[in-house]
Amino acid sequence: MQQIAIIQISEAGSEIASELQQTYSAKAIKRTDVGKLWQEYDAFVFIGAMGICVRTIAPFIKDKHEDPAVICIDSTGMNVISVLSGHVGGANDLTREISALIGAREVITTQSDNAGLWALDTFADRFNWSIASDDDMNECIFAFVNKKPTALLMKIRDEGTDYLEKSLPPHVTVVNSLEEVDPKKYSLVIIVSPYNLCAPYGVLELHFVPMIAALGFGLASHPDDYEDIYDQIDETLSSIGVLPCYKRYCTIDVKEDEEFCAMLVDEYNEELVFYTAEQLAKVEVPNPSDTVKKHVGTPSVCEAAAILGSNNGKLIVPKVKGKNWTAALAIDYKYLREQEGHIEIVGAGPGDPDLVSVRGRKMLERADLILYAGSLVPKALTECHKPGAVVRSSADMNLEEQCELMKEHYDKGHFIVRLHTGDPCIFGAIQEQMAFFDANNMRYHITPGISSFLAAAAELQSQFTIPERCQTIILTRGEGRTPMPEKEQLHLLARSQSTMCIFLSASIVDDVQRELLQEYPEDTPVAACYHLTWPDQKIYRGKLKDLAKIVQDNHLTLTTMLVVGEAIDNRQGLSELYSKHFTHLFRKGEA
Image 1 (tube, rainbow, N blue to C red):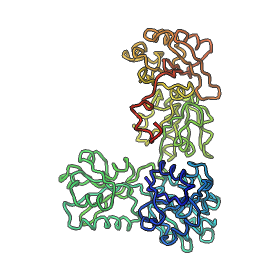
Image 2 (tube, rainbow, N blue to C red; image 1 turned 30 degrees about the vertical axis):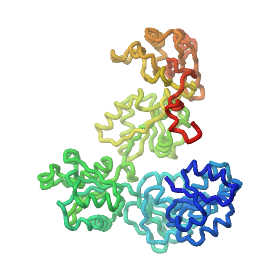
Image 3 (tube, one colour; image 1 turned 90 degrees about the horizontal axis):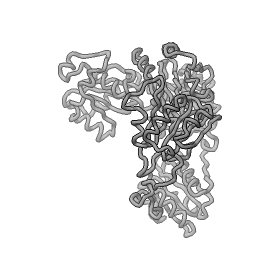
């Protein structure tokens, strides 16, 4: 959390000062104390005249990489002005926050912000990148903000590169290699890569190194040169073209008491992960060693640890040896841009394209193939696809045909989105597909989605858990063609009289109603929710005794969620959050 100092110059700004102190846990200080506290705070907020602010800070300003953020608010609260360290110090962001808080006008004079350009000097902190360029950062920024032709070379994919691709300025061109960076055409190249690359002569270079790799290492017992090993590993990997890009170090747990491991954590503040010999021995590696197995019980330490530390990623640097150490480097497949096939199972949400997750939307925009459940997922969800992507409904395909199509694209190194309704884990029919992916060693991941039962609660404007009345939500279905386990029969589940959300059961509503009435009172509230959040959404409320009639009279289909329980439309009962026992959660004076 930022440490913020408030300097109230005039009495007129007392209300603003009080609001900021409360919101940011900021401390009020005297103007005469600014100098001695200059390095103690992340930000100084002056409330009063700009001239007084400037004259106060002028003697202490050194460098944008060292100076704290400085903001000035006029005493009437009309303007919030970013004065110093707009990007690196965070004054611009804090200016926006405070402006929104007090309803003022933000005043930001940074050229890149006002021109809608990237704030290059914030990327290292923002995206956990280091900088490997020899060229002066300010010279690169000057060229960029003056819209000199710029090349962008990205060798990995992460949050930062996703942002760059989505917000690409007109004067920036994405290139695939440095061979495309013609000095006659480009003034600057921005590189995002863990590899040691060098821009052509005459082109400014800004090289960001993403911290995305796992470094696995083995270690001799109590080496005398342990203090030098840290640099030795960096130098060895750099000599083969890989820059220090490690977000974690990994090794076997028997090395936990080594001085080198303590140094990594205590002096360098590195993330250190230990694995057991049993965990490491399960990993297939290119360079197993009988000697290592004899001493520690696993044929590999550094390579296996790197692979495990990278979420079973790709081994980029196989085992290399130093005097008293071995090292290997691996990168999670999700960061790689090379032609590696991948399947993302995405939860589409209940239907409204705006209710797919931000991550799900990004996956759809990136996909080479979108295979969506056409009978359940609106096609509108796929309209964000990139040019050239294949978009196919699976409604007329059997499981074998779906898997064959995905494998065909996977083998070409394509990025595939399998789009399922709601959240894939709830009646999502993904288990058989995952079994196919596992059998064929195909990499996949699941992006969760908003389930239709959550959409039902929102559209019904109901809290499905009512204190002291109902604290459980049951998600289930009636017994149709798919048999239900004996212990999960509806009438047994109904004994708790919880809020029950029943999927895929409109066609057997008579059976559903009959079973529920064995336990719920006949006047229990119900709702039949058809095509939740779709343009043709319909919701019918009533009592349990009339549930079958509601469904049949309105010709509702399988795409109907049945909700049962007294939580529907209930406004009785006090949530614990607002009870007298939870007043410590509120700010002073709000309880």
